Length: 358
Image 1 (cartoon, helix red, strand yellow):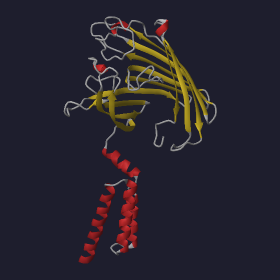
Image 2 (image 1 turned 90 degrees about the vertical axis):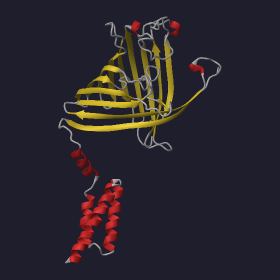
Image 3 (image 1 turned 30 degrees about the horizontal axis):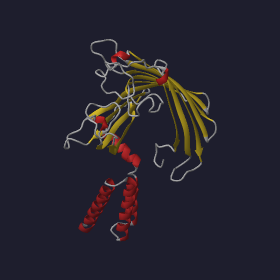
Image 4 (image 1 turned 90 degrees about the horizontal axis):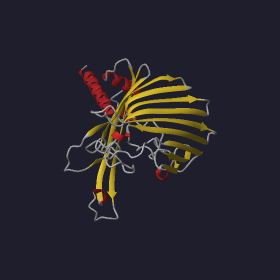
């Protein structure tokens, strides 16, 4: 009797150890490891065939779904939250800048070498009644540069700031497969489909956006993007500078291999006189300015864009159909003098990043 009791204790301890091993390793690998251990115990006569089979069945119940259920039971969520997603990325960069005039006293004309990193982490929460809330934190140098999350390694390992990179609420009251309408408010990702000719990729505007699509049929759709963006808030004036914009895009699929897109957009800034270098110091080069730093000309450009994509059946080191995209943009600002009021961009893109293997 004592021997049997000791043997049962041994079996329980062995299975407990196997279960602990499974908990500390990825699910698929852990399941195969525990099964191999049970097979070895069966071969040595410590477990019977039926006992080993029973323990294997119990082991298989620790699937990914079971883990998610167990995890969800530990993380209490209100019933009006339907799902959530955690995401993030990290990037390291070696940054070298050189100049043709190293003897210049200007800081922008000095040879420099920097080591930089970018860290971003965020969360999306989907709720009932077609609501979504999202936020993202990001690294960045002191001052919170609107165009970069890069942090420079400096000052003898000093602690570095973390900024609110995005914080928004989104409501999608219509989404029936034909019509879609969504409204967003807060600090959001770029609502317009544009290139760096208009907006820096890291720029996350603040304000409100309204976006919609209409699916004409399985091959053609129309998209509308619009936004009112706050550029600054003046404590001593009601003439806050805003930017308004609207964009219309026609997307077409002509065959499984050929796609195209045509778009037109218009933007306008009101109260440009308040956008001086003192009020909004974080500015880029290229705009003609008054002596006080304000914009010399109004900003109300019209932008036309177009693209055509052809998909190859396959391409080396690429999963799935390989897209080759030719695209271009043309911009005209009628408020500026004719010799300096136009811009254009064109290029070709091979492949498309966004998922593993591409």
